[in-house]
Image (cartoon, helix red, strand yellow):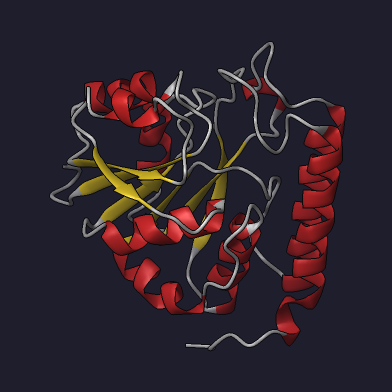
Length: 238
């Protein structure tokens, strides 16, 4: 628990068989996480066998896509404070304390991987990905007058359960550009948020998205299109 609030971590998994057990163990070791939820999104063979060695609860989401997995996690999570993180060992579990430092004042705290000081040697954050995420984040900031943003692709974030309830019926994206939709909905529904830098390490294994420059470029185009057309899509204001 944290300040008498129950804390949960959602870990969506697809291609993290070799790192997921370590990631779960790192969160367990902190001693303040009440529940760890793994969303098995048609994950690689052997992933389930790694998860059952830990205290995590595993749910199977058949609809393929990062967004579908996170939305399933939000539906399963009942705790007051909900972390979302990828179990590919690119993030440091102890960085949750950075998020928690702001959650009394903010309803959502987003992570950012583009601050050079926190990018580790070997991390998959070269010039193209770093500048691309920063530029698209600034486009969102400019068009929607948000608080300062520097990364649209970071999957480490903290959200209060009551903020999830405000947004969950309006989620539309089930694929890999769900993250920017969540950020835009946060602004659209006047939910308070900010973005903070987090450590970003080298990944265990290869990403199914950013490990390929062509797929990463396509994802960037999809994010830009979402940002440009968001105000014309059907979302409830309240």
